[in-house]
Image 1 (spheres, rainbow, N blue to C red):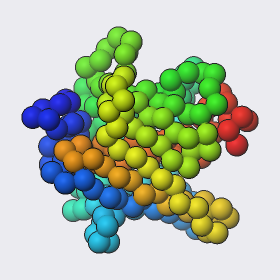
Image 2 (cartoon, rainbow, N blue to C red):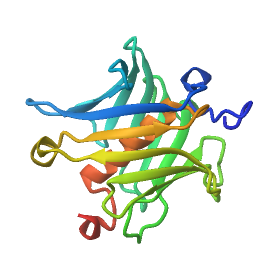
Image 3 (cartoon, rainbow, N blue to C red):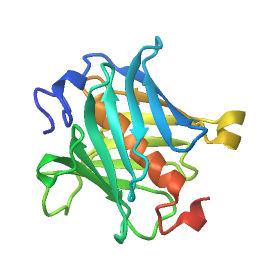
Image 4 (cartoon, helix red, strand yellow):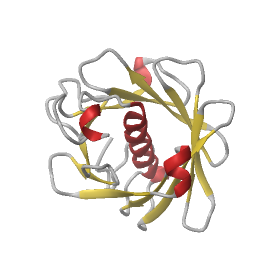
Length: 206
């Protein structure tokens, strides 16, 4: 659902703030394998944690809220012409619980532009949201539909640790009345695609 009372709601109205938000996403790589993400607000409170479910191929991640309740499952679909990720309610992967899909806008591109389609957009002729990363994917703009209406921005912070250990950090600015759970899930999907090289232009972008 989108555009209710001037709010951009995809996951839930409880994730829409009347004020702009600044969130910080930290990627964590575990010594014994696997990885996850930690999302904090600008005063250091944990907003979400995202954990990679080991042993699953294609990839599967679960998003937990601050109370450690699973709110979303992110799952990749391999063996498709476009890199495609699907997002479901809670810890489900049933088609009836699908919320949205994200896929590369083109098989032949120099940046991983993603088109986002809500579950009720069956034809997928026109995307409901768009992600437009920079060439080196150090930042990304997220737009509503085909418009120039910017709803969120991401900046990737490079550190010595991130270069050698893959512990990337992201700063995300979310506009007021925009579903920040939705925005965080998009940034995680973009990073998963980027880090796994799920793109026909992998050799061109790395």
